Length: 128
Length: 448
Image (cartoon, rainbow over all chains, first blue to last red; front, side, top):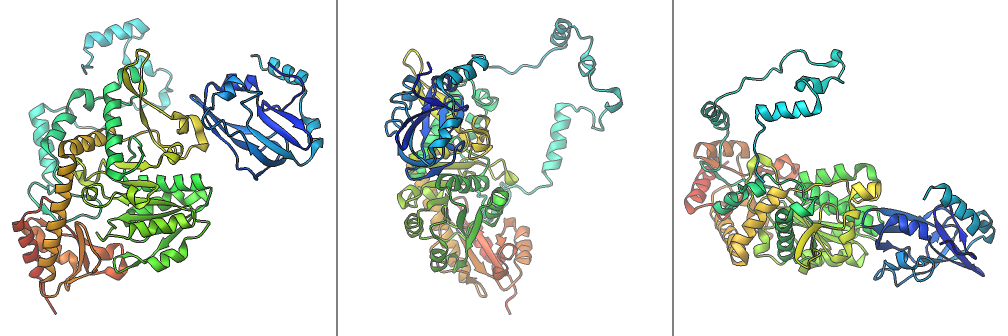
């Protein structure tokens, strides 16, 4: 479950870029490892984040895990559906389970991210 | 579940199954050069009657509250504990129960804690309460940390009228976290409201008061709450749970977090512990709350049951991102408090508070009418009050002890400006005769 047309980080986030903004979420691999998500801590709209910096926390029944930004930018939107329905992250990690929308500081940072093919290599090496 | 000792046969059988010759074999990986080669320097076993005699001799070296009437408060209170509390605590299911991490075999304990949490919410007027913390002092420190975590700010303003030892504990907990602790000074036995206002700003995570405060005086809680919220800070109230039988609930005064020392509810003074920290907060703060939390749910057959919940808050999951590293609670003390509150009920709690209030005010009138005794403050008070004496409080207390009265606290010990002042406490247990003897003992002092 690794869609084409998205870029991936080594921390198991995906980013879908459209113009100057990008939508970020966690991958199917990540949500499976996390377990049922019960709570999402989302960043404030307007806050800034650097590539690799934590955006917030995902809490499941057995773990509390930071999720990171694949690129530097400003938070322009957060998924308002998540506080009431955190399960969307498990059920539709690439669609309705998206986390944050960012305005990119520097599109060149995208070159450092992984393609779907490279990401598949990464998680296969993990030994699923 | 019964608690029965292993017999010699049981031990032999266990050793045989694991293939060990005797108990010593189990320590074979400890290098011989670090092993103690002689018996420990402890007295030998005693028969039960001898042991009882021995323990009674030791405990007789202390004064006890059955023989002495105590007018000492300052954080530990001689309120009556109904016999039913101890009677129920002694039930082996409660007395020997351990931590309820396996809900399948811990429903009794979990339900008792859930009821305790519910009672604390009702008493404080708050939405959520945890399963308890070690004591009032550490609960206060945890509340301060909670506020800093929630607001992301690093400055806490607290009243200088909070119990000095609670303030010390907060300082200890906050010391290496880069949090600025600001103390609003006392004036006339309550927090100086003007100075407090000047100290609270947009960098402040929390404003903290104690109600009634260390001097027994009543603070303007709603005003402090409004001040906090105007600046975007949380309002933390440290409350005397017994006083809540009569005072307005902190939840109705705008408190975001309520903490306190629960000893006054069903727990003996016990020479300082074990005590009971209670904590309650608004729903929006529940994920920041440290400690255990018992929740109500249904099992797979739809029957109501209880389990520890929201465990992802705790340090064994969240690690350094948790609010605190506490992963325990004071189950027995919390249970005692729950039985006590249930036994007294709303009316009983109101009566205890009312009697304490009346007797303290009667004592205050009697004692301040003595020659040479002045009230320290004019602010309204609950069950404690301070008076200025013309004799050293230590000398007065020595005299009182001879009449089997434990006198009050020398305030000079914590507040140099109030040296020569004594903090007295009067609970519902103090009789008219005891109060008269207190007055006589104080009145017998030399007046210049």
